[in-house]
Length: 269
Image 1 (cartoon, helix red, strand yellow):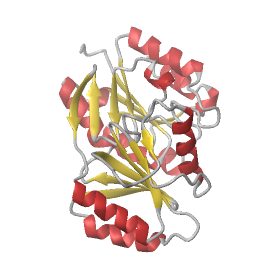
Image 2 (image 1 turned 60 degrees about the vertical axis):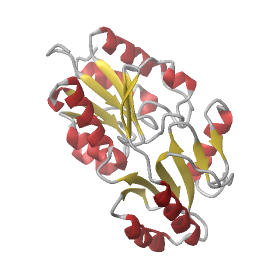
Image 3 (image 1 turned 180 degrees about the horizontal axis):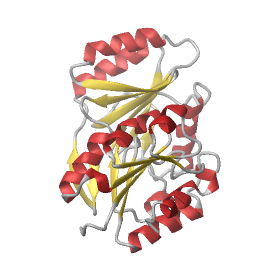
């Protein structure tokens, strides 16, 4: 890559993809293509696994995908990094969830495994279930009976959950796993020493560029590591306060052309 070319990392939900409208705003697609035309690389950096991409997101034609918070990385059509949760640890996570009435999804390259089909248990759990039902080409199962090779788990508290018991029980797997608290009702369970920031650094090393030439866009707590790793951090207008506080720049919301306006602000387009 030439020294003028930058690498742009985009979170998906509520950054690239409007959850309210269930689509990628046209202005965001225009911005991505214009940036690529200018010689920049545009990569998705998301908590979603590879199997959880709507066709319209894949059809944009991004240069790479950092999936499952840095656990699975594809660049220019090739997998350059991938780690999965060991089977024994999967069983421990299942037990911890079942004992504390926690529901969620084991997410991997080939399939997402939901504990059940309860769309009312938690709003985002219901949103994910609906997303998969609307896109049957995204492989999924509504049972934890045969979870295979997951990258991570995303779990939710709801009626009857014991959140404090759940978090305390995660200590028993802390030698291999870590967790991010998205909010009081939502957690991501990840392989230790992996997050969106480690993924960004891995790509920068692979491309032999400085992180000063990396631009990170996000809206949620799980984007903090990516913001800290990147030379430039841009929070969407709809971001949580925690992220806005550490961002270099706050753009408009996902529904108000936030990506396009920020690309313009940084002269990426």
